[in-house]
Length: 381
Image (cartoon, rainbow, N blue to C red):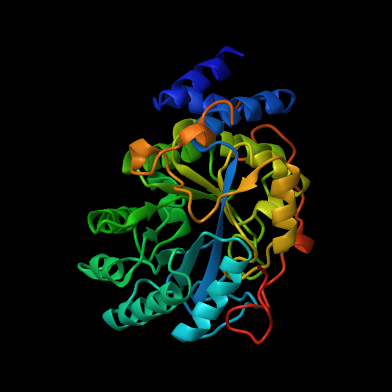
């Protein structure tokens, strides 16, 4: 297929595809799906070999958020029966993080609900970062605390944070449809604050909220322009009690096409398969490893994920390997430590359903988290 050959060539050169080419990926047929995966897989292997980076979430503060993001079970007015608790103590968060590191995680992501941190919150998170680094000096720590004020990114960097996550989530033109308590521009500004402080920027999207193909391409092109080091791709988890609980419009095939499009547009960044993979990719998760080079291990913020051992077995069975702590994730030109041979080649209509049958609701696959941080039960790692 000429389209795929062109996209592979551009990906190997780190050249931006055209909008038309990106849109065309999303409208390829199911008959061509394996060809699409194989083509994007060539780009993935060029820059990241067969390595898979594991990340682990620690929800420092759950629920009771004043923001009204429609996709979030922690939002203002949420009726979801999720865990709700205030800030974990540094030793509690460090213990939770250690479980993920023991399971193979290279990065720990510290997340807290809310519009953004107060200065006191930054102090609290700084102590938590110190506690984690004291136990696991080599682990990467990414903070995700909402909108940042002046100077806060610098303080997190000084405390030992390696990265900051703040997702764009959807296109600028439709952002107001999912959130009204802050703006798309607010999110962009926070990512730039993080970059200006020397933190590795992590920013991605949520697919499956009823957006069009054009919206998906818009947000991914915006991310390419913002140039984060990692791009998490979330698939909406329609949690009962949230405004988007009825949005079940993703199929495994569409999810794979979205991941392939992200890889072609962002060929040399860490593309992370994030929330919702178990719900929407289901038994086709191993195919996604040919497109992404990073996943979350274990549970998410308020819902349960696949068992940690099952994640590790899936990676091994698919012929990939967990990225070790001593390996630099990013290729050399992005500030990494070099790829060596591991990164070499050897190692329709614009609608949410893209013409396929709408996916049936699989509420049986959405389980509210009742273990790990904020509970007395062992975490999933």
